[in-house]
Image (cartoon, rainbow, N blue to C red; front, side, top):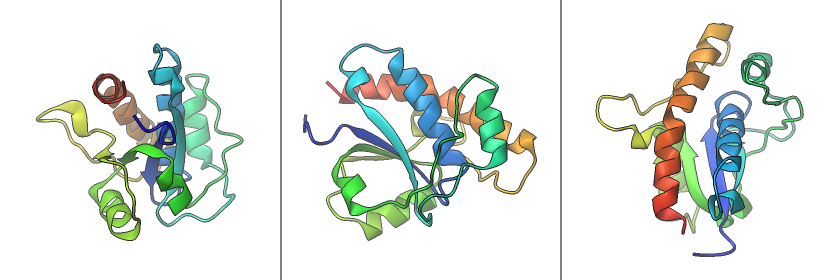
Length: 160
């Protein structure tokens, strides 16, 4: 295990909706696990993000329903420096993974979709709720929550 690669990076497009919610729910889940999983950190970034934009209002509202806080979130783009610290990249859609694999070098061995480990018959993509109703954000968040057990199982196998 590379001690310099302890980051799980959640990716979306603008880093204001999906990936910040994914970051928070995965941080919450990892905090309930044992070492070595508690040694992992989670950050989010966007493939087309700028620096410093807040999380969308609907993302903030959605995670507040389970007492998570995105009010201090500030967007950031994917950078080579982030990639160099990353153990696992988790994209929301295939396009996020395609872009990161073509744009950056020194990627970790593990580049996957957030819902990739759910098994057959489960959609692997998490659609962008940007500009939609709070219900679309809740559906997006519920899709992430549903994926957490499979992600934790994967991490237990891979991060030892």
